[in-house]
Length: 153
Image 1 (cartoon, rainbow, N blue to C red):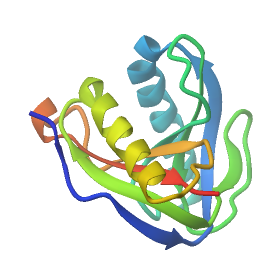
Image 2 (cartoon, rainbow, N blue to C red):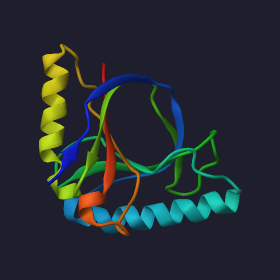
Image 3 (spheres, rainbow, N blue to C red):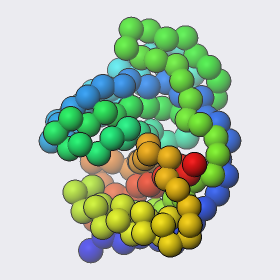
Image 4 (cartoon, rainbow, N blue to C red):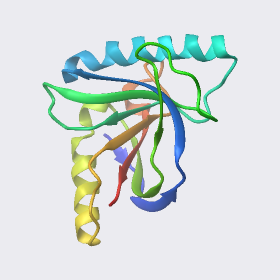
């Protein structure tokens, strides 16, 4: 059974990133994310740099057949770009977040719960949603930990 910790609000600082932005169908995401993380990890190793937080995927839309996704790594400073690996940032500002534990395919009710929380509290979402992955396929689906972050206007 998926589990959600409390929905909370906080102010985040701007975070430098390295990322690959692309479009994909939801069913193609697992392979695409894995390949992108491997390419960016190799590039970071080449640069002698490390992640400054856990990997993320930013969802710039929610069209499951044509997702606009940014697959990325938070880093400590602006780094040089290479090909489709771009330097960028996650904007600072107020966000609503929660920690979700369970299978990725079962996240929809958590998104709904967060959207309702935002509306109930008189806030406005900014559009892009971020998922930060604290573990991965080496864990049972029931133990996957994801922080879902919804920036606010």
